[in-house]
Structure formats: C-alpha cells, structure tokens
Image (cartoon, rainbow, N blue to C red; front, side, top):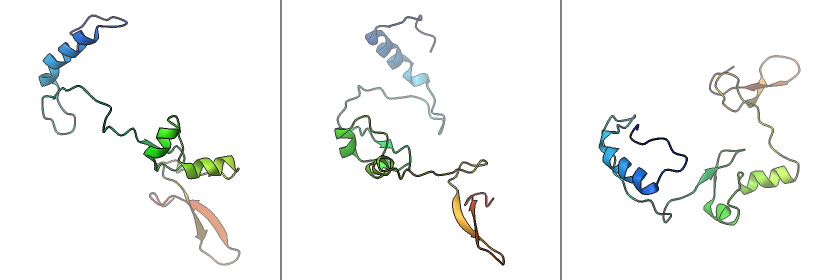
Length: 120
C-alpha cells in the first residue's frame, strides 16, 4: 500500500487501521467493484478444508481434526502404506491425468496412455 514504513514486526493495530482507511481504494480483479469490508476474523465456522495431494479429493474435516497435518485422504494414505500407491502419469501438454486405452487395429492388443482432454 505504501502507507507504512518497512518494519520487521509492525504494530498490528497500526496495520489494521491503515487497512481500514485504505479498503475503499482496493478493486476486485474479477468483477471490478471497488471497496472492501473489514471485520475481525473468527475461527468458528471457517472450514480448514484441504485437498488430498494424490487424488485431489477434499480431506474430511474429521480427519483433519485428528491429524491436522494430513496431506492425504484416508484411502490414499492406506494405499501408500500398503505399497499400492497410485503411480499416475500426466499429459505434458495440459496436465490432465492420462487414461489407459485399448489401441485399435488388427493383431495383438495394445494399450496406450492417452489424454482425455487433448486426445493425444
């Protein structure tokens, strides 16, 4: 914002007051509307949901309560502990997970990895 001198640990009250005074100047990148509302955040009702690093599914809140540092859902964690971790490959063009498809043609059946989005 350029309204505060650089300090390693600025005073929280000063930063909060400067932000409140400047909130009307900020503009939303999506809709272009100006102005922000400022309120003190509370921990109640704010879900700390996280996506699994393997499958991308949301990790249930119950699991995060018990294991706050969990980065995998229960199913993916069980697979990795039993040696069955999913070795997925991704499309080099778009990043989509590659699917195993039966290649068409005569003769011996062959399987190839193809991208469902790029069709390559």
